[in-house]
Length: 329
Image (tube, rainbow, N blue to C red; front, side, top):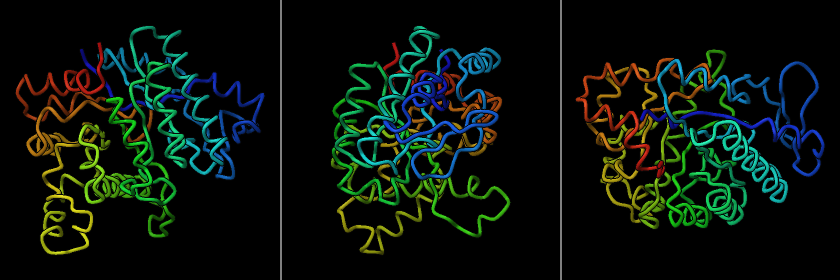
């Protein structure tokens, strides 16, 4: 079984409800060509790629690539962390119910989904994750590493992390929200540099802030091959040895936590994937395409096949690890 754990989809059923009741959710569909949404006072989205809300287009990609099962994550562009808590909770619930219904009715048994949660209120996020897993059959959650500028390792988020650990529900960190950096400029650096940076920052916060120590059963997935973390882990260790700030929450040596995370294969080059597997272990890496985005991998199995890995390692990455981590039947 080949499993893709990095896919994005929003059920159009959520759009239909928002169109009728925008004030309930704080979300509006904007007029014009394509599907554009405005979440609260945030800037409107660019027109959504059709595959983001069309399961048939995902199915076509899976058939072309030989992918058997996908773990569908939400779209972090519209997570809605800036909404008031009540609207944020309603918007998360709507997306989760619509996703579960779409996967049940249009792809029964083939694919599974991840919840979105109102991370602006960690206790409510914990409750929504519990509902999504226990009542809707979703497998875990996808969250933005940038929770409105608050570090994910802050103890304020512990109710959410505790729920994820207690439910054995993996949490995928997927970047979208960035602080304004003028030097990102016109060369798409907000994506090329900003997104891996956000993943690295969040992972470092979970390590050094003690979250991984407080919740030893927590499973956290880092997309884009873990951002910059695996390739600069020696720098983190050096800081831990020489700077008291890196030890203020009594975390251990950062490199000892590398295997506490899971990683996808979206590093684009076989040499990078081979290094990642050697560093963290073949049992911590899972196939990820980021379909349907431009920066995704249009041929995600290729990088695994070209990374000079033994057959058992390839099989683990292609699907066995995902089946274990996401409890796929």
